[in-house]
Image 1 (cartoon, one colour):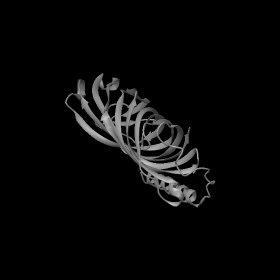
Image 2 (cartoon, helix red, strand yellow):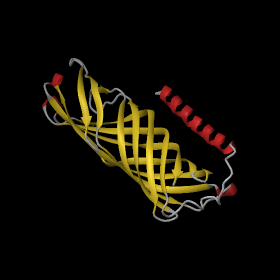
Image 3 (spheres, rainbow, N blue to C red):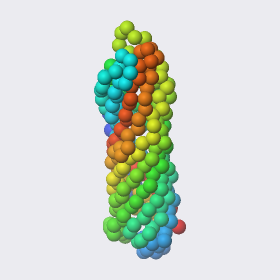
Image 4 (cartoon, rainbow, N blue to C red):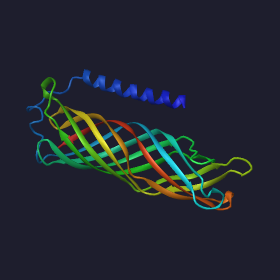
Length: 250
Protein backbone atom coordinates (compact mmCIF):
# COMPACT_ATOMS: atom_id res chain seq x y z
CA UNK A 1 0.00 0.00 0.00
CA UNK A 2 2.85 2.38 0.83
CA UNK A 3 4.40 1.84 -2.61
CA UNK A 4 1.14 2.84 -4.32
CA UNK A 5 0.88 6.00 -2.22
CA UNK A 6 4.43 6.99 -3.17
CA UNK A 7 3.68 6.32 -6.86
CA UNK A 8 0.51 8.44 -6.74
CA UNK A 9 2.32 11.28 -4.98
CA UNK A 10 5.13 11.15 -7.54
CA UNK A 11 2.75 11.40 -10.48
CA UNK A 12 0.80 14.21 -8.84
CA UNK A 13 4.09 16.08 -8.28
CA UNK A 14 4.96 15.49 -11.94
CA UNK A 15 1.65 17.01 -13.03
CA UNK A 16 2.27 20.09 -10.89
CA UNK A 17 5.79 20.42 -12.33
CA UNK A 18 4.33 20.25 -15.85
CA UNK A 19 1.87 23.04 -15.03
CA UNK A 20 4.63 25.24 -13.64
CA UNK A 21 6.75 24.57 -16.72
CA UNK A 22 3.84 25.53 -18.94
CA UNK A 23 3.56 28.85 -17.14
CA UNK A 24 7.23 29.51 -17.84
CA UNK A 25 6.91 28.84 -21.59
CA UNK A 26 6.64 31.70 -24.03
CA UNK A 27 3.39 31.23 -25.96
CA UNK A 28 3.21 32.42 -29.59
CA UNK A 29 1.83 35.91 -30.21
CA UNK A 30 -1.91 36.04 -30.92
CA UNK A 31 -3.16 37.40 -34.24
CA UNK A 32 -6.50 38.41 -32.70
CA UNK A 33 -7.74 39.49 -29.28
CA UNK A 34 -7.71 36.52 -26.91
CA UNK A 35 -10.76 34.25 -27.33
CA UNK A 36 -12.39 36.68 -29.80
CA UNK A 37 -12.49 33.94 -32.47
CA UNK A 38 -14.07 31.42 -30.10
CA UNK A 39 -17.68 31.46 -28.94
CA UNK A 40 -21.20 30.72 -30.17
CA UNK A 41 -21.05 28.34 -33.15
CA UNK A 42 -17.48 27.19 -32.46
CA UNK A 43 -16.71 23.44 -32.55
CA UNK A 44 -13.79 21.78 -30.80
CA UNK A 45 -11.88 18.54 -30.71
CA UNK A 46 -9.36 17.66 -28.02
CA UNK A 47 -7.34 15.02 -26.21
CA UNK A 48 -6.36 14.60 -22.57
CA UNK A 49 -4.82 12.27 -20.04
CA UNK A 50 -4.22 12.43 -16.32
CA UNK A 51 -4.05 10.61 -13.01
CA UNK A 52 -6.71 9.16 -10.71
CA UNK A 53 -7.12 8.81 -6.96
CA UNK A 54 -9.81 6.18 -7.21
CA UNK A 55 -11.45 3.32 -5.33
CA UNK A 56 -14.50 1.09 -5.52
CA UNK A 57 -16.84 -0.09 -2.79
CA UNK A 58 -17.78 -3.76 -3.24
CA UNK A 59 -20.83 -5.08 -1.38
CA UNK A 60 -21.61 -8.81 -1.40
CA UNK A 61 -24.66 -10.77 -0.27
CA UNK A 62 -24.70 -14.57 -0.24
CA UNK A 63 -27.76 -16.03 -1.97
CA UNK A 64 -27.46 -19.82 -1.99
CA UNK A 65 -25.50 -22.70 -0.48
CA UNK A 66 -22.97 -22.09 2.30
CA UNK A 67 -23.03 -18.35 1.51
CA UNK A 68 -26.74 -17.93 2.25
CA UNK A 69 -27.25 -14.93 4.51
CA UNK A 70 -23.60 -13.81 4.50
CA UNK A 71 -23.01 -10.11 3.77
CA UNK A 72 -19.95 -7.89 3.65
CA UNK A 73 -18.39 -4.74 2.20
CA UNK A 74 -14.86 -3.83 1.20
CA UNK A 75 -13.36 -0.62 -0.19
CA UNK A 76 -10.84 -1.49 -2.91
CA UNK A 77 -8.08 0.88 -4.02
CA UNK A 78 -7.71 1.12 -7.82
CA UNK A 79 -4.22 2.19 -8.89
CA UNK A 80 -4.24 3.85 -12.34
CA UNK A 81 -1.97 2.38 -15.04
CA UNK A 82 -2.80 4.55 -18.08
CA UNK A 83 -5.71 6.35 -19.68
CA UNK A 84 -6.73 8.90 -22.26
CA UNK A 85 -9.73 10.68 -23.72
CA UNK A 86 -10.93 12.03 -27.07
CA UNK A 87 -13.27 15.00 -26.68
CA UNK A 88 -15.56 17.12 -28.82
CA UNK A 89 -17.92 19.97 -28.02
CA UNK A 90 -20.02 22.72 -29.60
CA UNK A 91 -20.59 26.22 -28.19
CA UNK A 92 -24.31 27.01 -27.97
CA UNK A 93 -23.45 30.47 -26.62
CA UNK A 94 -20.20 32.35 -26.04
CA UNK A 95 -19.98 30.77 -22.57
CA UNK A 96 -21.82 27.42 -22.70
CA UNK A 97 -20.88 24.27 -24.61
CA UNK A 98 -22.20 20.70 -24.86
CA UNK A 99 -20.21 17.74 -26.06
CA UNK A 100 -19.12 14.15 -25.78
CA UNK A 101 -16.06 12.24 -24.57
CA UNK A 102 -14.79 8.71 -25.19
CA UNK A 103 -12.37 7.73 -22.46
CA UNK A 104 -10.22 4.67 -21.79
CA UNK A 105 -9.05 3.89 -18.26
CA UNK A 106 -6.85 1.07 -16.98
CA UNK A 107 -6.58 0.16 -13.29
CA UNK A 108 -4.76 -2.34 -11.10
CA UNK A 109 -7.08 -3.36 -8.23
CA UNK A 110 -6.05 -4.27 -4.72
CA UNK A 111 -7.19 -7.56 -3.23
CA UNK A 112 -10.91 -7.44 -2.41
CA UNK A 113 -12.52 -9.27 0.51
CA UNK A 114 -16.23 -8.42 0.62
CA UNK A 115 -16.90 -11.85 2.23
CA UNK A 116 -14.45 -14.32 3.81
CA UNK A 117 -12.58 -15.12 0.56
CA UNK A 118 -9.93 -12.90 -1.03
CA UNK A 119 -10.55 -11.91 -4.66
CA UNK A 120 -7.32 -11.22 -6.57
CA UNK A 121 -7.93 -9.68 -10.02
CA UNK A 122 -5.52 -8.74 -12.82
CA UNK A 123 -5.44 -5.17 -14.21
CA UNK A 124 -8.58 -4.29 -16.18
CA UNK A 125 -9.75 -1.64 -18.66
CA UNK A 126 -13.00 0.31 -18.92
CA UNK A 127 -14.40 2.46 -21.76
CA UNK A 128 -16.48 5.47 -20.70
CA UNK A 129 -19.05 7.15 -22.99
CA UNK A 130 -19.58 10.61 -21.55
CA UNK A 131 -22.04 13.41 -22.17
CA UNK A 132 -20.50 16.68 -21.03
CA UNK A 133 -21.46 20.30 -20.37
CA UNK A 134 -19.10 23.24 -19.77
CA UNK A 135 -19.63 26.82 -18.67
CA UNK A 136 -16.71 29.19 -19.41
CA UNK A 137 -16.17 32.33 -17.36
CA UNK A 138 -14.61 35.58 -18.53
CA UNK A 139 -10.88 35.38 -19.33
CA UNK A 140 -8.24 36.69 -16.95
CA UNK A 141 -4.48 37.00 -16.50
CA UNK A 142 -1.78 38.36 -18.80
CA UNK A 143 -3.24 39.10 -22.27
CA UNK A 144 -6.51 37.52 -21.00
CA UNK A 145 -5.31 34.10 -22.11
CA UNK A 146 -6.62 32.14 -19.11
CA UNK A 147 -10.27 31.08 -19.05
CA UNK A 148 -11.73 29.07 -16.13
CA UNK A 149 -14.62 26.64 -16.55
CA UNK A 150 -16.94 24.38 -14.60
CA UNK A 151 -19.10 21.52 -15.81
CA UNK A 152 -21.06 18.33 -15.24
CA UNK A 153 -20.33 14.97 -16.89
CA UNK A 154 -22.60 11.93 -17.12
CA UNK A 155 -20.92 8.63 -18.04
CA UNK A 156 -22.10 5.22 -19.24
CA UNK A 157 -19.81 2.20 -18.87
CA UNK A 158 -21.00 -0.96 -20.60
CA UNK A 159 -19.34 -3.47 -18.26
CA UNK A 160 -16.30 -4.26 -16.12
CA UNK A 161 -14.45 -7.35 -17.34
CA UNK A 162 -12.17 -8.48 -14.50
CA UNK A 163 -11.18 -11.63 -16.41
CA UNK A 164 -10.21 -14.74 -14.46
CA UNK A 165 -10.13 -13.77 -10.78
CA UNK A 166 -8.29 -15.90 -8.22
CA UNK A 167 -10.54 -16.72 -5.24
CA UNK A 168 -8.59 -17.68 -2.11
CA UNK A 169 -10.88 -19.31 0.45
CA UNK A 170 -10.10 -19.92 4.10
CA UNK A 171 -9.18 -23.54 4.93
CA UNK A 172 -10.28 -26.18 4.16
CA UNK A 173 -11.70 -24.94 0.83
CA UNK A 174 -9.23 -25.01 -2.10
CA UNK A 175 -8.61 -21.84 -4.15
CA UNK A 176 -10.09 -21.48 -7.63
CA UNK A 177 -10.42 -19.01 -10.51
CA UNK A 178 -13.77 -17.44 -11.36
CA UNK A 179 -14.51 -15.37 -14.50
CA UNK A 180 -16.11 -12.09 -13.43
CA UNK A 181 -17.84 -9.70 -15.85
CA UNK A 182 -19.84 -7.10 -13.93
CA UNK A 183 -22.77 -5.27 -15.50
CA UNK A 184 -23.06 -1.72 -16.83
CA UNK A 185 -23.05 1.31 -14.57
CA UNK A 186 -23.32 5.11 -14.79
CA UNK A 187 -21.51 7.94 -13.03
CA UNK A 188 -21.87 11.68 -12.43
CA UNK A 189 -18.91 14.07 -12.15
CA UNK A 190 -18.45 17.71 -11.18
CA UNK A 191 -15.66 19.34 -13.20
CA UNK A 192 -13.55 22.46 -12.67
CA UNK A 193 -10.48 23.72 -14.49
CA UNK A 194 -8.96 26.38 -16.67
CA UNK A 195 -7.81 26.75 -20.27
CA UNK A 196 -4.78 28.67 -21.49
CA UNK A 197 -5.05 30.02 -25.05
CA UNK A 198 -1.75 28.85 -26.57
CA UNK A 199 -2.50 30.33 -30.00
CA UNK A 200 -5.59 31.61 -31.81
CA UNK A 201 -6.90 28.09 -32.45
CA UNK A 202 -5.60 25.94 -29.58
CA UNK A 203 -5.75 25.89 -25.80
CA UNK A 204 -3.97 23.89 -23.11
CA UNK A 205 -6.51 22.62 -20.56
CA UNK A 206 -6.02 21.45 -16.99
CA UNK A 207 -8.26 20.67 -14.06
CA UNK A 208 -9.97 17.87 -12.23
CA UNK A 209 -13.28 16.22 -11.56
CA UNK A 210 -14.80 14.22 -8.74
CA UNK A 211 -16.86 11.28 -9.93
CA UNK A 212 -19.31 9.05 -8.10
CA UNK A 213 -21.64 6.22 -9.07
CA UNK A 214 -25.19 7.00 -10.14
CA UNK A 215 -26.19 3.40 -10.99
CA UNK A 216 -24.01 0.63 -9.52
CA UNK A 217 -22.53 -2.31 -11.43
CA UNK A 218 -23.99 -5.68 -10.42
CA UNK A 219 -23.06 -9.32 -10.96
CA UNK A 220 -24.04 -12.71 -9.53
CA UNK A 221 -21.03 -14.95 -8.85
CA UNK A 222 -21.03 -18.75 -8.67
CA UNK A 223 -18.28 -20.55 -6.71
CA UNK A 224 -17.85 -24.21 -7.79
CA UNK A 225 -15.48 -25.05 -4.92
CA UNK A 226 -18.18 -23.98 -2.48
CA UNK A 227 -20.62 -26.47 -3.99
CA UNK A 228 -22.03 -23.95 -6.46
CA UNK A 229 -22.93 -21.34 -3.83
CA UNK A 230 -23.80 -17.91 -5.26
CA UNK A 231 -23.43 -14.31 -4.12
CA UNK A 232 -24.65 -11.00 -5.54
CA UNK A 233 -21.88 -8.38 -5.75
CA UNK A 234 -22.47 -4.64 -6.24
CA UNK A 235 -19.54 -2.39 -7.27
CA UNK A 236 -19.59 1.42 -6.89
CA UNK A 237 -16.46 3.26 -8.14
CA UNK A 238 -15.70 6.79 -6.91
CA UNK A 239 -12.78 9.19 -6.87
CA UNK A 240 -10.86 12.25 -8.03
CA UNK A 241 -9.28 12.47 -11.49
CA UNK A 242 -6.80 15.19 -12.51
CA UNK A 243 -6.37 15.89 -16.23
CA UNK A 244 -4.33 17.89 -18.70
CA UNK A 245 -4.78 18.11 -22.45
CA UNK A 246 -5.17 20.22 -25.57
CA UNK A 247 -8.23 21.53 -27.42
CA UNK A 248 -8.39 22.69 -31.05
CA UNK A 249 -11.07 25.21 -32.13
CA UNK A 250 -12.61 25.52 -35.58
